[in-house]
Length: 521
Ligand code: SF4
Image (cartoon, rainbow, N blue to C red; front, side, top):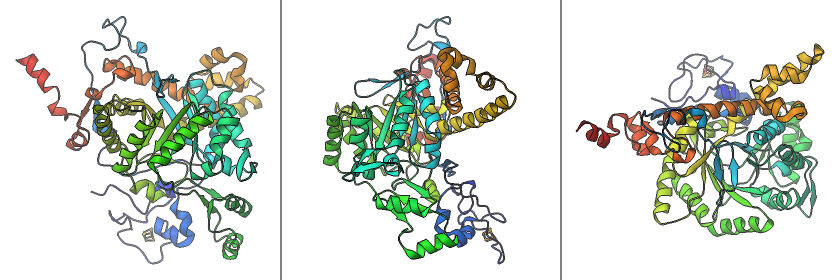
Protein backbone atom coordinates (compact mmCIF):
# COMPACT_ATOMS: atom_id res chain seq x y z
CA UNK A 1 0.00 0.00 0.00
CA UNK A 2 1.38 3.39 -0.98
CA UNK A 3 1.52 5.98 1.78
CA UNK A 4 1.73 8.92 -0.63
CA UNK A 5 -0.36 10.51 -3.38
CA UNK A 6 2.08 11.98 -5.90
CA UNK A 7 1.11 14.03 -8.96
CA UNK A 8 -2.17 15.36 -7.56
CA UNK A 9 -3.03 17.33 -4.47
CA UNK A 10 -5.26 20.10 -3.24
CA UNK A 11 -1.99 21.70 -2.07
CA UNK A 12 -0.77 22.29 -5.62
CA UNK A 13 -4.28 22.66 -7.10
CA UNK A 14 -3.68 19.61 -9.27
CA UNK A 15 -5.66 16.51 -10.09
CA UNK A 16 -5.53 13.56 -12.44
CA UNK A 17 -7.83 12.94 -15.41
CA UNK A 18 -8.59 9.34 -14.41
CA UNK A 19 -7.56 7.02 -11.58
CA UNK A 20 -3.89 7.42 -10.65
CA UNK A 21 -1.34 4.58 -10.64
CA UNK A 22 -0.48 4.10 -6.95
CA UNK A 23 3.28 4.60 -7.08
CA UNK A 24 3.78 7.24 -9.81
CA UNK A 25 0.48 9.06 -9.38
CA UNK A 26 0.31 9.31 -13.18
CA UNK A 27 -3.10 8.48 -14.69
CA UNK A 28 -3.31 4.77 -15.45
CA UNK A 29 -3.82 5.93 -19.04
CA UNK A 30 -2.05 9.21 -19.82
CA UNK A 31 -3.77 10.63 -22.89
CA UNK A 32 -1.95 12.50 -25.65
CA UNK A 33 -3.98 15.71 -25.95
CA UNK A 34 -4.84 16.02 -22.24
CA UNK A 35 -4.39 19.59 -21.01
CA UNK A 36 -2.52 18.22 -18.01
CA UNK A 37 -4.27 19.23 -14.77
CA UNK A 38 -1.83 16.99 -12.85
CA UNK A 39 1.38 18.17 -11.18
CA UNK A 40 3.56 16.93 -14.05
CA UNK A 41 1.28 18.60 -16.60
CA UNK A 42 1.24 21.93 -14.77
CA UNK A 43 5.02 21.70 -14.38
CA UNK A 44 5.32 21.41 -18.16
CA UNK A 45 3.98 24.99 -18.28
CA UNK A 46 4.81 26.66 -14.98
CA UNK A 47 8.01 24.75 -14.15
CA UNK A 48 9.51 25.54 -10.73
CA UNK A 49 6.49 27.49 -9.57
CA UNK A 50 4.73 24.13 -9.21
CA UNK A 51 7.08 23.01 -6.45
CA UNK A 52 5.12 24.98 -3.83
CA UNK A 53 1.59 24.82 -2.37
CA UNK A 54 -0.69 27.45 -3.85
CA UNK A 55 -1.80 30.21 -3.73
CA UNK A 56 1.18 31.62 -1.82
CA UNK A 57 0.32 34.10 0.92
CA UNK A 58 -3.27 32.94 1.29
CA UNK A 59 -2.87 29.37 2.55
CA UNK A 60 -1.10 27.23 5.08
CA UNK A 61 -0.34 23.68 4.00
CA UNK A 62 0.11 20.35 5.78
CA UNK A 63 1.44 17.07 4.43
CA UNK A 64 -1.14 14.55 3.17
CA UNK A 65 1.13 11.54 3.59
CA UNK A 66 -0.27 8.66 5.65
CA UNK A 67 2.53 7.72 8.03
CA UNK A 68 2.73 4.15 9.40
CA UNK A 69 2.01 5.36 12.95
CA UNK A 70 0.31 8.52 14.11
CA UNK A 71 -1.51 9.68 17.22
CA UNK A 72 -4.72 7.92 16.16
CA UNK A 73 -2.88 4.65 16.74
CA UNK A 74 -3.00 5.27 20.48
CA UNK A 75 -5.99 5.52 22.78
CA UNK A 76 -6.15 7.43 26.02
CA UNK A 77 -6.61 5.16 29.02
CA UNK A 78 -9.48 5.86 31.37
CA UNK A 79 -10.04 4.49 34.84
CA UNK A 80 -12.83 4.50 37.38
CA UNK A 81 -10.49 4.35 40.33
CA UNK A 82 -9.03 7.26 42.31
CA UNK A 83 -7.73 10.70 41.38
CA UNK A 84 -4.13 11.95 41.04
CA UNK A 85 -3.36 15.49 42.13
CA UNK A 86 -6.61 16.11 43.95
CA UNK A 87 -8.68 14.47 46.68
CA UNK A 88 -10.48 11.38 45.36
CA UNK A 89 -13.90 12.77 46.22
CA UNK A 90 -16.57 13.13 43.51
CA UNK A 91 -17.39 16.61 44.81
CA UNK A 92 -13.76 17.72 44.57
CA UNK A 93 -12.38 15.74 41.63
CA UNK A 94 -14.63 17.34 39.01
CA UNK A 95 -13.36 17.95 35.48
CA UNK A 96 -13.42 21.79 35.76
CA UNK A 97 -10.95 21.36 38.65
CA UNK A 98 -8.26 19.99 36.29
CA UNK A 99 -5.23 22.30 36.09
CA UNK A 100 -3.91 22.76 32.52
CA UNK A 101 -1.25 25.38 33.29
CA UNK A 102 2.38 24.65 32.47
CA UNK A 103 5.84 26.11 33.08
CA UNK A 104 8.74 26.41 30.66
CA UNK A 105 12.28 27.68 31.16
CA UNK A 106 15.10 26.05 33.12
CA UNK A 107 13.83 27.94 36.19
CA UNK A 108 10.14 27.36 35.38
CA UNK A 109 9.80 31.11 34.97
CA UNK A 110 7.81 31.11 31.70
CA UNK A 111 4.25 30.47 32.87
CA UNK A 112 1.49 29.48 30.43
CA UNK A 113 -2.22 29.25 31.20
CA UNK A 114 -2.49 26.46 28.62
CA UNK A 115 0.30 24.24 27.22
CA UNK A 116 0.32 25.47 23.62
CA UNK A 117 2.14 28.01 21.50
CA UNK A 118 2.11 29.16 17.91
CA UNK A 119 4.41 28.01 15.15
CA UNK A 120 6.96 30.45 13.83
CA UNK A 121 4.88 33.31 12.44
CA UNK A 122 7.54 34.67 10.14
CA UNK A 123 8.01 36.51 6.88
CA UNK A 124 5.47 34.79 4.61
CA UNK A 125 2.52 36.98 3.61
CA UNK A 126 0.02 34.88 5.53
CA UNK A 127 2.12 35.21 8.71
CA UNK A 128 2.57 38.96 8.31
CA UNK A 129 -1.13 39.60 7.56
CA UNK A 130 -2.38 37.57 10.54
CA UNK A 131 0.27 38.63 13.05
CA UNK A 132 -1.71 41.15 15.07
CA UNK A 133 -4.71 38.85 15.51
CA UNK A 134 -2.44 35.98 16.56
CA UNK A 135 -0.25 38.05 18.87
CA UNK A 136 -3.24 39.53 20.69
CA UNK A 137 -4.91 36.09 20.77
CA UNK A 138 -1.79 34.61 22.38
CA UNK A 139 -1.51 37.46 24.89
CA UNK A 140 -5.12 37.22 26.09
CA UNK A 141 -4.94 33.41 26.19
CA UNK A 142 -1.75 33.37 28.28
CA UNK A 143 0.27 31.40 25.72
CA UNK A 144 3.37 32.03 23.60
CA UNK A 145 3.65 33.51 20.12
CA UNK A 146 6.79 33.04 18.04
CA UNK A 147 8.04 35.67 15.60
CA UNK A 148 9.75 33.59 12.92
CA UNK A 149 12.84 34.08 10.79
CA UNK A 150 13.64 36.88 8.36
CA UNK A 151 11.16 39.48 9.65
CA UNK A 152 13.77 42.27 9.84
CA UNK A 153 15.53 41.23 6.63
CA UNK A 154 12.22 41.22 4.73
CA UNK A 155 11.02 44.54 6.15
CA UNK A 156 10.87 46.99 3.20
CA UNK A 157 11.25 49.93 5.64
CA UNK A 158 14.18 48.41 7.55
CA UNK A 159 17.20 50.64 8.18
CA UNK A 160 20.75 49.31 8.31
CA UNK A 161 23.99 50.63 9.69
CA UNK A 162 27.27 48.90 8.70
CA UNK A 163 25.28 45.93 7.43
CA UNK A 164 23.43 45.52 10.74
CA UNK A 165 19.78 46.23 11.38
CA UNK A 166 19.25 49.52 13.23
CA UNK A 167 15.48 49.85 12.84
CA UNK A 168 12.69 47.56 11.67
CA UNK A 169 9.18 49.03 11.88
CA UNK A 170 7.74 45.62 11.05
CA UNK A 171 9.51 43.91 13.97
CA UNK A 172 8.49 46.79 16.26
CA UNK A 173 4.87 46.34 15.17
CA UNK A 174 5.08 42.64 15.94
CA UNK A 175 6.59 43.01 19.40
CA UNK A 176 4.30 45.89 20.39
CA UNK A 177 1.11 44.10 19.29
CA UNK A 178 1.86 41.36 21.81
CA UNK A 179 3.16 43.55 24.62
CA UNK A 180 0.10 45.83 24.59
CA UNK A 181 -2.13 42.95 25.67
CA UNK A 182 0.31 40.81 27.65
CA UNK A 183 -0.54 40.53 31.31
CA UNK A 184 2.04 38.16 32.69
CA UNK A 185 1.34 34.70 31.29
CA UNK A 186 2.76 33.45 28.01
CA UNK A 187 5.36 35.44 26.11
CA UNK A 188 6.87 36.38 22.78
CA UNK A 189 9.83 34.48 21.31
CA UNK A 190 11.88 35.84 18.40
CA UNK A 191 13.76 33.38 16.17
CA UNK A 192 17.00 33.83 14.28
CA UNK A 193 18.46 31.95 11.34
CA UNK A 194 21.73 32.45 9.44
CA UNK A 195 20.66 35.72 7.76
CA UNK A 196 19.08 37.13 10.94
CA UNK A 197 22.27 36.48 12.88
CA UNK A 198 24.38 38.14 10.15
CA UNK A 199 22.06 41.16 10.20
CA UNK A 200 22.35 41.52 14.00
CA UNK A 201 18.67 40.72 14.72
CA UNK A 202 19.43 39.24 18.18
CA UNK A 203 21.19 42.42 19.32
CA UNK A 204 18.40 44.58 17.90
CA UNK A 205 15.40 42.76 19.41
CA UNK A 206 17.00 42.03 22.78
CA UNK A 207 18.72 45.35 23.40
CA UNK A 208 16.36 47.76 21.64
CA UNK A 209 12.96 46.05 21.77
CA UNK A 210 13.31 44.33 25.15
CA UNK A 211 12.57 40.80 23.90
CA UNK A 212 13.36 38.36 26.72
CA UNK A 213 13.06 34.97 25.01
CA UNK A 214 15.23 34.29 21.98
CA UNK A 215 15.18 31.17 19.82
CA UNK A 216 17.96 29.58 17.83
CA UNK A 217 16.59 27.69 14.87
CA UNK A 218 18.00 24.54 13.33
CA UNK A 219 14.95 23.73 11.27
CA UNK A 220 11.32 22.68 11.13
CA UNK A 221 9.21 19.66 10.28
CA UNK A 222 7.98 20.87 6.92
CA UNK A 223 11.40 21.24 5.27
CA UNK A 224 15.10 20.76 5.83
CA UNK A 225 16.24 23.87 4.01
CA UNK A 226 15.97 27.46 5.18
CA UNK A 227 12.87 29.65 5.06
CA UNK A 228 11.53 30.89 1.75
CA UNK A 229 8.89 33.21 0.36
CA UNK A 230 7.69 34.35 -3.06
CA UNK A 231 8.19 37.87 -4.36
CA UNK A 232 5.84 39.47 -6.83
CA UNK A 233 7.88 42.42 -8.07
CA UNK A 234 11.32 42.71 -9.58
CA UNK A 235 12.11 45.70 -7.33
CA UNK A 236 11.49 43.59 -4.22
CA UNK A 237 13.54 40.73 -5.65
CA UNK A 238 16.44 43.12 -6.29
CA UNK A 239 16.15 44.65 -2.81
CA UNK A 240 16.37 41.27 -1.07
CA UNK A 241 19.22 40.07 -3.28
CA UNK A 242 21.02 43.25 -2.30
CA UNK A 243 20.44 42.40 1.38
CA UNK A 244 22.23 39.08 0.92
CA UNK A 245 19.41 36.61 0.35
CA UNK A 246 19.44 33.92 -2.33
CA UNK A 247 16.85 35.05 -4.91
CA UNK A 248 15.76 32.76 -7.77
CA UNK A 249 15.76 33.29 -10.67
CA UNK A 250 18.49 35.93 -10.36
CA UNK A 251 16.62 39.24 -10.82
CA UNK A 252 19.77 40.88 -12.22
CA UNK A 253 19.83 38.34 -15.07
CA UNK A 254 18.36 39.88 -18.30
CA UNK A 255 16.71 36.54 -19.26
CA UNK A 256 14.90 36.43 -15.91
CA UNK A 257 13.83 40.06 -16.31
CA UNK A 258 12.49 39.29 -19.79
CA UNK A 259 10.63 36.17 -18.55
CA UNK A 260 9.03 38.25 -15.78
CA UNK A 261 8.07 41.02 -18.20
CA UNK A 262 6.40 38.62 -20.65
CA UNK A 263 4.65 36.59 -17.93
CA UNK A 264 6.57 33.32 -18.38
CA UNK A 265 7.40 33.64 -14.69
CA UNK A 266 5.14 35.53 -12.33
CA UNK A 267 7.25 35.54 -9.20
CA UNK A 268 10.71 35.26 -7.71
CA UNK A 269 11.69 33.09 -4.75
CA UNK A 270 13.68 34.30 -1.75
CA UNK A 271 15.58 31.53 0.04
CA UNK A 272 17.60 31.42 3.25
CA UNK A 273 20.91 29.67 3.70
CA UNK A 274 21.44 26.28 5.33
CA UNK A 275 22.58 26.46 8.93
CA UNK A 276 25.73 24.52 9.88
CA UNK A 277 25.34 23.18 13.39
CA UNK A 278 28.53 23.04 15.43
CA UNK A 279 28.64 22.08 19.10
CA UNK A 280 31.08 24.68 20.36
CA UNK A 281 29.54 27.45 18.25
CA UNK A 282 26.12 26.55 19.67
CA UNK A 283 27.29 26.89 23.27
CA UNK A 284 29.01 30.18 22.45
CA UNK A 285 25.90 31.58 20.75
CA UNK A 286 23.66 30.61 23.68
CA UNK A 287 26.06 32.39 26.04
CA UNK A 288 26.31 35.41 23.74
CA UNK A 289 22.50 35.76 23.67
CA UNK A 290 22.42 35.62 27.47
CA UNK A 291 25.15 38.22 27.68
CA UNK A 292 23.12 40.47 25.35
CA UNK A 293 20.30 40.29 27.89
CA UNK A 294 18.13 37.35 26.78
CA UNK A 295 16.48 35.97 29.90
CA UNK A 296 15.65 32.70 28.18
CA UNK A 297 17.28 30.96 25.20
CA UNK A 298 15.36 28.28 23.33
CA UNK A 299 16.06 25.95 20.38
CA UNK A 300 13.81 24.71 17.61
CA UNK A 301 14.86 21.72 15.58
CA UNK A 302 13.16 19.90 12.73
CA UNK A 303 12.48 16.34 11.63
CA UNK A 304 16.17 15.60 11.00
CA UNK A 305 17.77 12.17 11.31
CA UNK A 306 18.04 10.56 14.77
CA UNK A 307 21.68 11.54 15.27
CA UNK A 308 20.74 15.20 14.83
CA UNK A 309 17.96 14.78 17.39
CA UNK A 310 20.58 13.40 19.78
CA UNK A 311 22.70 16.50 19.08
CA UNK A 312 19.76 18.81 19.77
CA UNK A 313 18.95 17.11 23.09
CA UNK A 314 22.58 16.78 24.24
CA UNK A 315 23.60 20.33 23.31
CA UNK A 316 20.40 21.74 24.84
CA UNK A 317 21.14 19.85 28.02
CA UNK A 318 24.74 21.11 28.19
CA UNK A 319 23.74 24.71 27.37
CA UNK A 320 20.83 24.66 29.85
CA UNK A 321 18.43 25.67 27.09
CA UNK A 322 15.03 26.84 28.38
CA UNK A 323 12.83 25.09 25.83
CA UNK A 324 13.57 22.61 23.06
CA UNK A 325 10.88 22.40 20.37
CA UNK A 326 11.02 19.27 18.22
CA UNK A 327 9.01 19.51 15.00
CA UNK A 328 8.09 16.25 13.27
CA UNK A 329 7.29 15.59 9.62
CA UNK A 330 3.61 15.87 8.80
CA UNK A 331 3.22 19.38 10.13
CA UNK A 332 2.50 22.60 8.35
CA UNK A 333 3.96 25.68 6.81
CA UNK A 334 3.25 28.96 5.08
CA UNK A 335 5.57 27.99 2.25
CA UNK A 336 7.69 24.87 1.79
CA UNK A 337 8.32 22.67 -1.24
CA UNK A 338 5.30 20.36 -1.40
CA UNK A 339 7.09 17.11 -2.17
CA UNK A 340 9.67 17.90 0.51
CA UNK A 341 6.87 18.40 3.04
CA UNK A 342 5.51 14.97 2.23
CA UNK A 343 8.67 12.97 1.67
CA UNK A 344 11.41 14.12 4.03
CA UNK A 345 11.89 13.71 7.74
CA UNK A 346 10.93 11.56 10.70
CA UNK A 347 7.18 11.68 11.43
CA UNK A 348 6.04 13.22 14.70
CA UNK A 349 5.17 10.06 16.66
CA UNK A 350 8.42 8.32 15.77
CA UNK A 351 10.45 11.46 16.47
CA UNK A 352 8.80 11.91 19.84
CA UNK A 353 9.46 8.28 20.77
CA UNK A 354 13.14 8.70 19.86
CA UNK A 355 13.14 11.86 21.98
CA UNK A 356 11.77 9.97 24.95
CA UNK A 357 14.44 7.25 24.64
CA UNK A 358 17.24 9.81 24.41
CA UNK A 359 15.96 11.85 27.36
CA UNK A 360 15.79 8.68 29.46
CA UNK A 361 19.45 7.95 28.64
CA UNK A 362 20.58 11.42 29.61
CA UNK A 363 18.44 11.46 32.73
CA UNK A 364 20.01 8.18 33.88
CA UNK A 365 23.34 10.04 33.84
CA UNK A 366 21.88 12.83 35.96
CA UNK A 367 21.86 15.35 33.11
CA UNK A 368 19.62 18.40 32.89
CA UNK A 369 16.70 17.78 30.50
CA UNK A 370 15.21 20.99 29.08
CA UNK A 371 11.43 21.41 28.91
CA UNK A 372 10.44 19.86 25.58
CA UNK A 373 7.65 20.85 23.18
CA UNK A 374 6.38 18.68 20.34
CA UNK A 375 5.14 19.99 17.00
CA UNK A 376 4.07 18.45 13.71
CA UNK A 377 0.45 18.00 12.68
CA UNK A 378 -1.28 18.37 16.05
CA UNK A 379 -4.60 20.19 16.27
CA UNK A 380 -7.04 19.12 19.02
CA UNK A 381 -7.11 18.30 22.73
CA UNK A 382 -6.66 14.55 22.29
CA UNK A 383 -3.44 15.27 20.36
CA UNK A 384 -2.26 17.44 23.23
CA UNK A 385 -2.96 14.73 25.78
CA UNK A 386 -1.31 12.01 23.73
CA UNK A 387 1.78 14.04 22.85
CA UNK A 388 2.28 15.04 26.50
CA UNK A 389 1.77 11.43 27.65
CA UNK A 390 4.00 9.84 24.98
CA UNK A 391 6.96 12.03 25.96
CA UNK A 392 6.22 12.25 29.70
CA UNK A 393 7.71 13.52 31.92
CA UNK A 394 9.75 15.62 29.49
CA UNK A 395 7.10 17.13 27.19
CA UNK A 396 5.65 20.27 28.76
CA UNK A 397 3.93 21.98 25.83
CA UNK A 398 2.73 21.56 22.26
CA UNK A 399 3.42 23.82 19.30
CA UNK A 400 0.23 24.21 17.24
CA UNK A 401 1.47 25.85 14.05
CA UNK A 402 -1.38 25.59 11.58
CA UNK A 403 -4.21 25.00 14.05
CA UNK A 404 -3.89 28.31 15.91
CA UNK A 405 -3.62 30.13 12.60
CA UNK A 406 -6.76 28.41 11.30
CA UNK A 407 -8.81 29.54 14.31
CA UNK A 408 -7.43 33.06 13.95
CA UNK A 409 -8.24 33.30 10.23
CA UNK A 410 -11.80 32.02 10.72
CA UNK A 411 -12.39 34.47 13.58
CA UNK A 412 -11.04 37.26 11.40
CA UNK A 413 -13.21 36.31 8.41
CA UNK A 414 -16.44 36.16 10.39
CA UNK A 415 -15.53 39.22 12.45
CA UNK A 416 -15.05 41.23 9.28
CA UNK A 417 -18.40 40.11 7.86
CA UNK A 418 -20.15 40.87 11.14
CA UNK A 419 -18.54 44.32 11.39
CA UNK A 420 -19.66 45.16 7.83
CA UNK A 421 -23.20 43.99 8.57
CA UNK A 422 -23.47 45.92 11.83
CA UNK A 423 -22.07 49.10 10.28
CA UNK A 424 -24.48 48.80 7.36
CA UNK A 425 -27.39 48.46 9.76
CA UNK A 426 -26.09 51.25 12.01
CA UNK A 427 -25.67 48.87 14.92
CA UNK A 428 -22.93 48.42 17.51
CA UNK A 429 -20.05 46.24 16.22
CA UNK A 430 -19.14 45.24 19.80
CA UNK A 431 -22.58 43.80 20.26
CA UNK A 432 -22.20 41.96 16.96
CA UNK A 433 -19.01 40.32 18.23
CA UNK A 434 -20.82 39.25 21.38
CA UNK A 435 -23.48 37.64 19.21
CA UNK A 436 -20.91 36.01 16.95
CA UNK A 437 -18.44 34.59 19.46
CA UNK A 438 -19.38 32.26 22.32
CA UNK A 439 -16.65 33.91 24.39
CA UNK A 440 -17.67 37.46 23.36
CA UNK A 441 -19.61 38.37 26.50
CA UNK A 442 -16.90 36.89 28.73
CA UNK A 443 -14.19 38.95 27.01
CA UNK A 444 -16.38 42.06 27.14
CA UNK A 445 -16.64 41.62 30.90
CA UNK A 446 -12.88 41.07 31.18
CA UNK A 447 -11.75 43.97 28.99
CA UNK A 448 -14.59 46.49 29.28
CA UNK A 449 -14.25 49.30 26.76
CA UNK A 450 -11.01 47.74 25.40
CA UNK A 451 -13.10 44.84 24.09
CA UNK A 452 -13.78 46.94 21.00
CA UNK A 453 -10.04 47.03 20.25
CA UNK A 454 -9.65 43.24 20.17
CA UNK A 455 -9.01 42.02 16.63
CA UNK A 456 -11.70 39.40 15.81
CA UNK A 457 -9.02 36.88 14.84
CA UNK A 458 -7.67 37.14 18.40
CA UNK A 459 -11.14 36.32 19.74
CA UNK A 460 -11.29 33.31 17.39
CA UNK A 461 -7.93 32.06 18.65
CA UNK A 462 -8.96 32.60 22.29
CA UNK A 463 -12.24 30.76 21.66
CA UNK A 464 -10.47 27.77 20.11
CA UNK A 465 -7.98 27.58 23.00
CA UNK A 466 -10.89 27.87 25.46
CA UNK A 467 -12.60 24.93 23.75
CA UNK A 468 -9.40 22.83 23.87
CA UNK A 469 -8.95 23.81 27.51
CA UNK A 470 -12.26 22.24 28.47
CA UNK A 471 -11.71 19.29 26.13
CA UNK A 472 -8.32 18.56 27.73
CA UNK A 473 -9.77 18.93 31.22
CA UNK A 474 -12.37 16.30 30.32
CA UNK A 475 -9.80 13.87 28.92
CA UNK A 476 -7.55 14.35 31.95
CA UNK A 477 -10.42 13.90 34.38
CA UNK A 478 -11.30 10.67 32.57
CA UNK A 479 -7.74 9.49 33.14
CA UNK A 480 -7.99 10.80 36.74
CA UNK A 481 -5.02 13.12 36.25
CA UNK A 482 -5.77 16.57 37.70
CA UNK A 483 -2.64 18.44 36.61
CA UNK A 484 -0.44 18.14 33.51
CA UNK A 485 2.59 16.90 35.42
CA UNK A 486 0.66 13.78 36.43
CA UNK A 487 0.04 12.63 32.85
CA UNK A 488 2.37 9.74 32.05
CA UNK A 489 2.97 7.02 29.48
CA UNK A 490 0.68 4.64 31.36
CA UNK A 491 -2.20 6.88 30.26
CA UNK A 492 -1.85 5.53 26.72
CA UNK A 493 -2.43 2.19 25.06
CA UNK A 494 -1.28 1.20 21.56
CA UNK A 495 -3.97 0.04 19.15
CA UNK A 496 -1.56 -1.47 16.62
CA UNK A 497 1.56 -3.61 16.95
CA UNK A 498 3.47 -1.02 14.91
CA UNK A 499 2.58 1.75 17.37
CA UNK A 500 3.50 -0.51 20.29
CA UNK A 501 6.89 -1.36 18.69
CA UNK A 502 7.66 2.28 17.91
CA UNK A 503 6.70 3.60 21.33
CA UNK A 504 7.13 0.86 23.90
CA UNK A 505 3.54 1.60 24.98
CA UNK A 506 1.76 -1.74 25.65
CA UNK A 507 -0.42 -3.21 22.93
CA UNK A 508 -4.09 -3.00 23.85
CA UNK A 509 -4.42 -6.75 24.51
CA UNK A 510 -1.30 -6.84 26.69
CA UNK A 511 -1.88 -3.99 29.13
CA UNK A 512 -2.28 -4.13 32.91
CA UNK A 513 -1.20 -7.80 32.98
CA UNK A 514 0.28 -7.75 36.49
CA UNK A 515 -2.66 -5.88 37.95
CA UNK A 516 -5.11 -8.24 36.30
CA UNK A 517 -3.26 -11.18 37.87
CA UNK A 518 -3.45 -9.53 41.27
CA UNK A 519 -7.17 -8.88 40.89
CA UNK A 520 -8.10 -12.27 39.50
CA UNK A 521 -5.59 -14.28 41.50
S1 SF4 B 1 -1.40 14.73 -18.52
FE1 SF4 B 1 -3.58 14.32 -18.17
S2 SF4 B 1 -3.82 12.13 -18.60
FE2 SF4 B 1 -1.62 12.50 -18.36
S3 SF4 B 1 -1.22 12.06 -16.18
FE3 SF4 B 1 -1.64 14.26 -16.34
S4 SF4 B 1 -3.85 14.44 -15.96
FE4 SF4 B 1 -3.44 12.31 -16.43
